[in-house]
Length: 237
Image 1 (cartoon, rainbow, N blue to C red):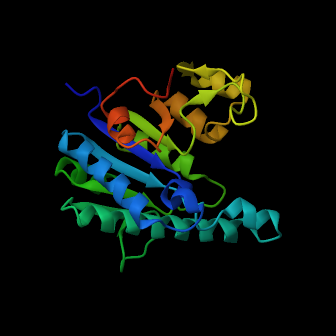
Image 2: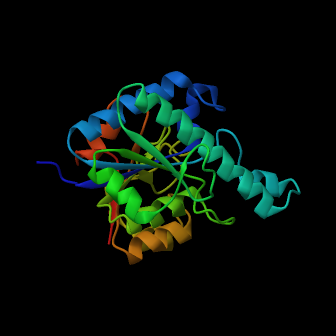
Image 3: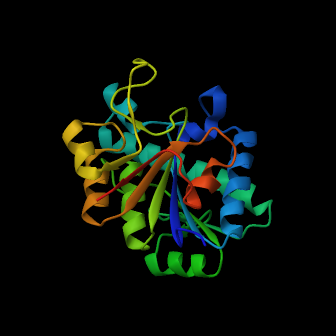
């Protein structure tokens, strides 16, 4: 029996770029779609939140003098491009998919409506959330936490590129870094661990949303995480 009933998969923009580091790699997107399809075939409701860092980062633009709100809106547009790419890959595999965006763009996607998103999942469709929360100054990590709370998801599956969980230091810089198997959200805040921003962390903590942080690189890790297998780091409390 599956551990979860409804999951939110959080994908960074970088995870869609693959080793090229930028843009959208069709082979990588196809591999992710294969895994999402497998999760759906196990009977789980699936929603996906995608980042846009492979195309544009609002913070980077702001750091170089661009108006922060304007830069963030550009980042939201980047997430929609990623959402459409994933939708295309899924639908080529006969997986019914809907893209819902927090900013209205009716020619390419539905406007996000909570009840409609839930109904899509109840009908077996994968729902992909684009354009973040629709507001500048909020990350797609916060979007994942917000959407998970709204659609009453059991867990957020946070797929990281090149990192197999949460460590007390950067394992790429410190070979002695210790990996956590389990954590509480208050530990993340108190220790300043760079898992997600403090807004997203607090939102998950306040709404008792479980989080699993795992490495997206090995094939089938998305499915393993969705089925509750012991990979990565689990956060709760």
